[in-house]
Length: 245
Image (cartoon, rainbow, N blue to C red; front, side):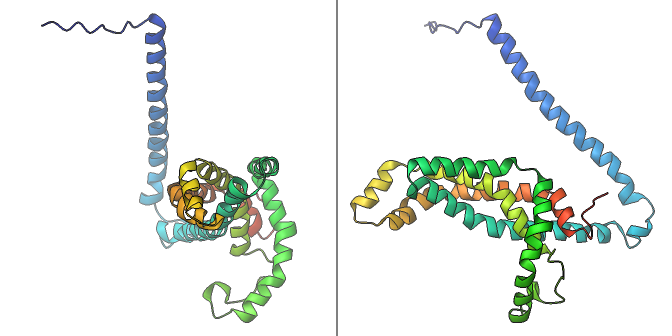
């Protein structure tokens, strides 16, 4: 018995579009591979060449402090931003009235459009002097914690200040993503929890948060990537002067 199933007719436009899409995808992969190969080739002398004065003890001894500082500041920022982002997303999606929630959502999204230089200047001129008395109090009362031990910075430009700046920088993207995930919670789940006598917070704890847990983790990873890749604001806050050359 012959197969009488009709075959799809491929028009010229479909063929051209499919080939262009395939070429675009392959070109992206080829570009990434080329960039990776170029960076690897250019970095080989750093591993095989003679040590310089700045890295007289070896390449990794020179790089590890920078890696540690980057990860340390990013983790602080993520620890501060994640609960704030979840709280903002919950308030916008389940507590605020529709008009105010829309305005607040726009305001949070606009924070992502602020340049890194502005965040850096704000950290230097406003946040660091404001936090300096707080650092003195933390050192006097919680100095037994390694994070708050040691000599207190007179300028307030510390890793904790950098972490707070990074938290504010990654907060918009995290809050926006988590908000959209919370809004996708099935209405039947929420109504079922309320019908069983749950309060609004119990409904959120039983229906919204479990549904949004993967989205929260994904948003946190995206925020961590943004924090790890941030350079200008961190350099401006930690630099001895406000001029970065």
